[in-house]
Length: 134
Length: 195
Image (cartoon, rainbow over all chains, first blue to last red; front, side):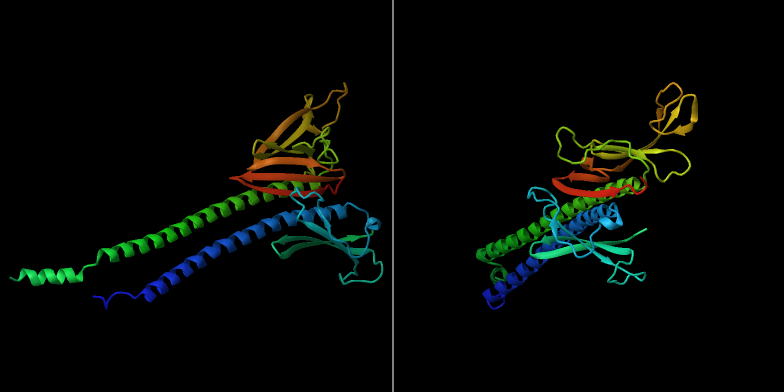
């Protein structure tokens, strides 16, 4: 009878495998929460990007500065729900084929990028529009 | 007789008390681990579904309001330029002309009603000529204002805990969605392109 029983090593290995399986399953939840947070942040950031686009559309062609913008926070107040989001507006002259042009072609491409951090990794969404000088 | 060898065999095949206790203890630990995993799974699922529902409501609310505001010809509601002026707080409703309606003068109103976002369409007319829809600030020959008539009212979103309209030139729509201890803050800006 003693020969048929499991040895201590066998039992420990079996429990070890079981624990690793459980830990593996639990790590799915962490990943799922992470993906979930990412999708929520994309929703927030897309709406902020659309807001930035509308702000720029409301300006006249000459009011918009061509060149790369600087990254600015949506709010300086840390308690503000949008403190973690930064926006950057890049404006370039483009030709009729939407390729970058060096001179004022009467057509600009406005690219709004919203940045945020999830832990250490930086994420962003980008929305672009065109504006013509008419 | 033949009884004792039988008994002997049975006793040899049994488990000792120590073995049973050890097995029960291991089974208990394993089942507890499984149960904890199951509970964590259920909780994670519920929270994901809840957050998806909140995000869904927020998206649809912002999408519908900003789409209508972008097309409008005139915003009737006076809104403050900033969110934080205590003397001039931002309203939780907005009335504006329906820019999608090309034939008749129609108005749209969005408002927060409890936790619901409601969209109302309405028109204005004088009692002397109810079929002629006029501007909200029109006057008849006696300088009387027109009467308001509601055409429809629909619920567009749920779980809204706060809705604010503010901004000059561009309308900022500030939305807080809340349910089951989770909160999502959303805001966007809509420029009325036809004004």
